[in-house]
Image 1 (cartoon, rainbow, N blue to C red):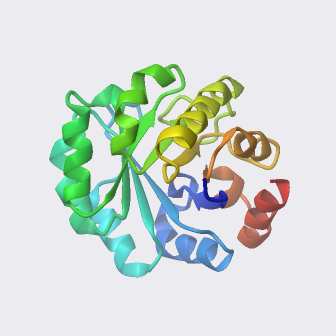
Image 2 (cartoon, rainbow, N blue to C red; image 1 turned 135 degrees about the horizontal axis):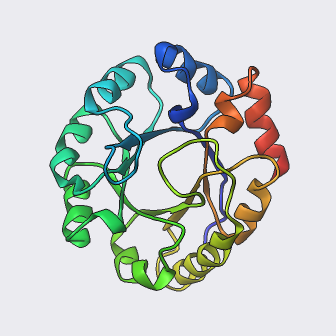
Length: 220
């Protein structure tokens, strides 16, 4: 297996929406690797965020890789819109898809790298059958829907199980963790097997974005 590289992915859910382009530029200059976009529909999760038009505007304002996390019921009707908006990677929830394999294949056919997202309570066994068809797994380490929550250590054994699976079956699979990532939790997640770290308030909640990102890397 190739050596893992830890990538920091700030989530714009914790940014100032009124200054979104400036906020993204600040984390790009601060050393972020890519941008995480949390799309919520008010049904699958209780919160409501933004749709493809906002993402299209953001893509026009930055050359950073946009990673879209669809926290929506029945996401298939949204896939083409987000692909056209400029999304590079997209994860959909196994808990929200009736025909997950079809949805994953559709994401890939639209030119995006597909991933499966999994809630804290959903077991490794539930997602094992789809992993061979995915480029990455987005492991929720909080209950989805709101920023600023505390990391749930109970997800670490699931991350370790995914890591063991990829070592045997798909070494190129990436593991993403989303929720509660900060300097006191990032090392345990990396040790369990995580490659991509979604960080919201740990980055956008700090005035010095470069120091915040460098602090996360140092904590590894």
